[in-house]
Image 1 (cartoon, rainbow, N blue to C red):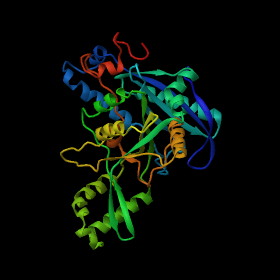
Image 2: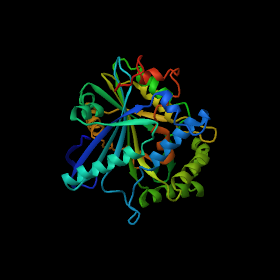
Image 3: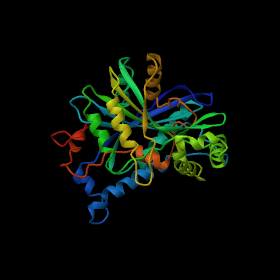
Image 4: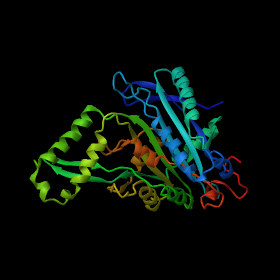
Length: 362
């Protein structure tokens, strides 16, 4: 039976509630088994089909109240975690969280949410429910994240600071990847000498009226040329990019999420790992140049412990500015990636399967 961890929590709404968390181990299907999932005889489109299933799973995580136009009160959240341990294959976990007014309701909602995730997760992978507290704590990385010697960093998208009347207004770039770029993520994690964790936390949200007004005000000032200093600034070259940004963010009925990417390693900051991941998730495309990425480290050991605690319990780390972690479906799809191993000859195969062809649970 699925293990559900239930405890008191303070939600963003300030109401004293109960929080329930649960998890699954995520296992890649062996290549020979996975290839049999293709439609028809053309194995060349297998990856395309698989990525479409993944995108559909991401889209399904968008939840909001249609009548009130508000975010769900249950703070439902998922985290995808990849663990690197010396001498072992990489391990993936999918964790879920919901909040409710009572302990009983929180447990029931967690069961329902777990069933929803299990029934909609891409069939290219096997989900194994975590049935004991020990397995659950291991899958959350509790021991690692509770280690005061561990170091956590966040990977944020790059930003463009626009000097407008009343002060500088930042526009955050986009998450974007390519078909093969995520391979670099798994390789970088597997090379860690002392192990580490990649954590991707996802929570549905809405672009509020205040957010729209904020963006529309910046857009209006740019278009009107109200700030003449902008036209002699190097940022003049970013106007076309900015217009594409506003169009994408302000498109009606767009689905949005809070999306945060963190890496946790032992003893010292490993910006090389963060650079490998950041570069893979902010890759330029022919029709869309990006502002790149930035690596954010905690300012103190106390802040580091707060970040670790929030990651452990599937909570969001407050972003540096209001729209700092906002992402649309396409961006989430670029970051919330899974390993696809179409053949045993791919170098990635031995990152997830040992010499006997067994994964971590084999």
